[in-house]
Image 1 (cartoon, rainbow, N blue to C red):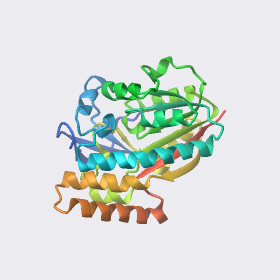
Image 2: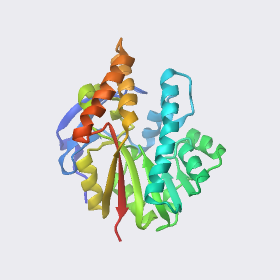
Image 3: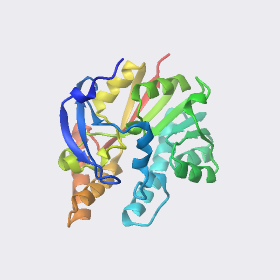
Image 4: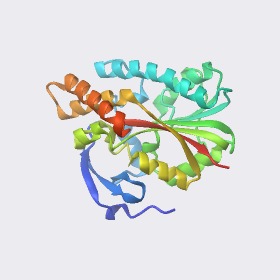
Length: 286
C-alpha cells in the first residue's frame, strides 16, 4: 500500500485553523478510501506547536468556560458509556492499551473497573496530569510487547496520526490475535459537517490530518486485515461540535443554533447512520 501524491488530489474545501495559527489548509479528497486529507501537513518538528493552546481542552482538565464545563460534563457521561462498550466485547476484562490517553480519565476509570491498563500520550502536560491520576503512560509505542493487548482503544486519535499506514501496522502488531480495536473519529459526511462546511469544528486543521467516512475507514482497516464488527453513534458530538462551529462563525445566536443543528444532525442520522462522530469496533483476524 502506498500513499498517493496528495498535491495532485482534488481540493474539496479550504479550512482555517481557528485554534492556534489562523493559517489556511486544503482538504483533499482521497477517493480510494473516501477520506479527506489535510494539505499541506505540518512536519513532525512543527506539528506539536499547533497543540499549544489553552483552548485545546482534551489536554487539560479545565472548567473555566461554559464550553469547558459542557465538555467535562459530557466526558463524565461518555466514560460510563465507553466502559459499558468494553464490557460488551470483553466481559472477562484483560489487558487494555489506550493510545492518545489525554489526561488519563478513561484509563483511570478502566483501571478501577478491573482492566490491566497501559496508555500512550505524547503531549507532556496531558501526560503529567494522567500520571497524577495513577495510570501507566508509556513513552514509545514501538517498545511495547507485541501480540500483548486484548483491547486497544483510540478515542478521537486516529485523525491526528501523521504516518497513518505505519501506525495501523503497529497497532495490529500490538494487538492479540482476534483482539478488539475500538476507534472513534469524526465523520465528515454527517449533517452537521455538511451544514457548517469550512466552519465545521471537527475538521480542526492541521491537528486533524485525516477526515474519515464510514465506508472509507471500513475499507482501510479491511485492507490491513481487520474485520469490522459493529458501528456506534456518538450522539453528544453533534451538539459539542456545533457549539464550537457556531463560535467560529461568531454567531449571535450560537448556543440556540448549536442545539438545533446538533439535534437535526442526529435526527437525520437515524436514517442515514451518518452521525457527527462514530465508534468503530474491529477485530484483528488471525
